[in-house]
Length: 388
Ligand code: COS
Image (cartoon, rainbow, N blue to C red; front, side, top):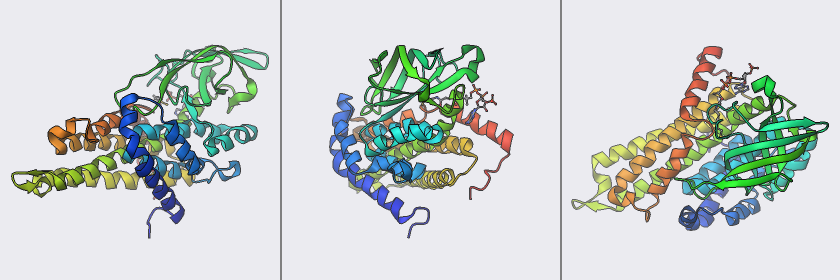
């Protein structure tokens, strides 16, 4: 009996765990070292139909929403958060189409993503538009039925490896934030190329690349949600996808916790397994407390959002912040449990610690999340309506 998850959701979680153990674990160190993109793993994920999980049923998906996506992301991240990001980043890039796409746009793109043939990416961030997301300099100049995109997007997950990009650009600079518009742009369009490939601290099995637009011509039919709706499209997308970041962080924490228990049960010092020492037990018990709280929060929130919950900005930010903060604490403690060995690349926990760090930063720093949470409390009150 599962309290929060249906049998089907448990099956998705189990399938993702099996794939992670059999296919991702053997190669995670190799991808971490080379920084290459794991196309072979994306093919396995596609073959196991896990890209269908978060796509609505009408568009050849399975309709398991944010909950399904979060469960698969958690399980992939338990083994390797970098490789998991090819999947989760596609979820992020797909979300604006699910939330704001016209029927025609959904029919065109969602089945391809469900099949796992084409990955997606979300292009919001620029060099001067990080936390200050509305300070976008990429311009979409209107000429008749077309817009001409000029500018550079930075730190884009799935950059170059994705085929479908959601680009937030300013189509009416005089209107500031209300001039922002979201466009669907496909790889291969004239005037759309790729720039710098980032060399990262962690999540090295993922691609982080600049997108460069030079007079890239996009038809107005590729606008998502209408002209001037770009900031809303971006913010709403992040409300949903931040639960996925929480799930990714939860998976990293779970992986580090399991490795810590295993290691402490084998490692002998002073003639005893170190797990028999209360100081180690204290660390491990604290890991368990944080993880169970994070899991209950993540699954409940995902179900709330999928069930049509209204207070999603606050919920998304709470999940993302709590899970990423505990992931950072737990992976740091895991390195401590391993002692000197924990610092070495032969053991998986130093990578988990590096991978955890980004979850406190991307899709909005945890400082920004706390601002969002506080603003929502001020606007809507202390309670999250209808969540429990
Ligand atoms: N859903 C819908 N609309 C939203 C929204 C949300 N979650 N958040 C803001 N908006 C709307 C506001 O309602 C407002 O619209 P009106 O002017 O019509 O009332 C508009 O957007 C501007 O909102 P606000 O004044 O709060 O915008 P700010 O520029 O102050 O920015 C923060 C708000 C800081 C919260 C935002 O920029 C942010 O989330 N930054 C982090 C970005 C991020 O996550 N970057 C990482 C990207 S990695 S993919």
